[in-house]
Amino acid sequence: MSKAPFSSLNFFSGSGDDLEAVAENYRRAAASLEVQAERIYVLSQVHGIDHHVLTRASSREEVLHEQGDITLSCDEGVACGVRTADCAAVLIADRRSGAAAAVHSGWRGTVAGVAEAGVEALRKLTGHRGDLVAAIGPHIEGCCFEVGPEVAETIAACTRLGDAVVEAREPRPHVDLRRVIEHQLETAGVEVDHVLGCTVCDPSRFHSYRRDGKVSGRMLAAIVTGGVPD
Image 1 (tube, one colour):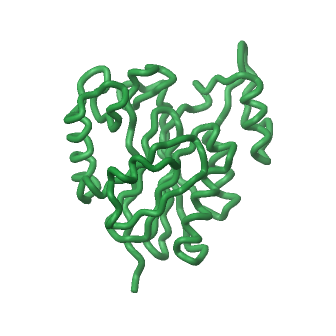
Image 2: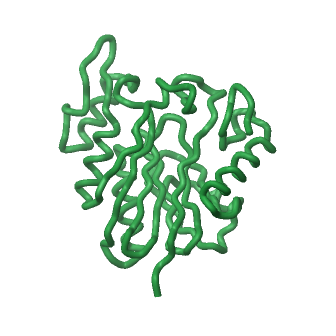
Image 3: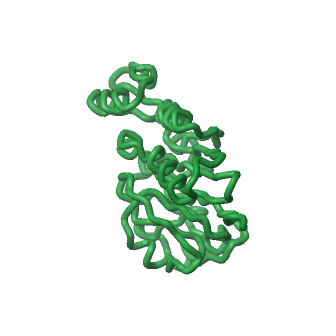
């Protein structure tokens, strides 16, 4: 378990945390998810829309060096994961097949349509539209997501909700990223649930790059596949 300033569950050693502490955090997450630690997969995230299909034979270390923001699989017992520290994690499951995907959706990825890309990739993998449900996790909420006017305009332009996702404040506007992602998923025909929480507002529960800068830890969001029925 990580010590301050990374306490307690940090899944990223690049900020200076102890490697063994991070490894122990993965072991604890694996026990909670009821999978082997080597079956928890995350990519080198780049705020894009590329995906990586996982199998039980995938090498965790090799996957970690692949760039992308969507992990997905239909092999049973695979934990598709993303790491976050203000961006939104979107976990998608297909009730019909047991296949699943994890999506890393910061504002750049949201503008690029990464949640929709995750839905499309999952449907392509299973070969059908499925019965999809998604959960949007804690991230920087509208209360703290202060951006420049150009970023606010860019985000508003990526959704049919438009300026409804922007709150005019001084000195700079605030954006409701959750509402944008929810609308994207619902437009794609996905049922949406929420795990609420603002990463910036709640240091007792969440890591936040906006709040803590380069010494911020990373949270893990993962979903375990149930496998495709015969």
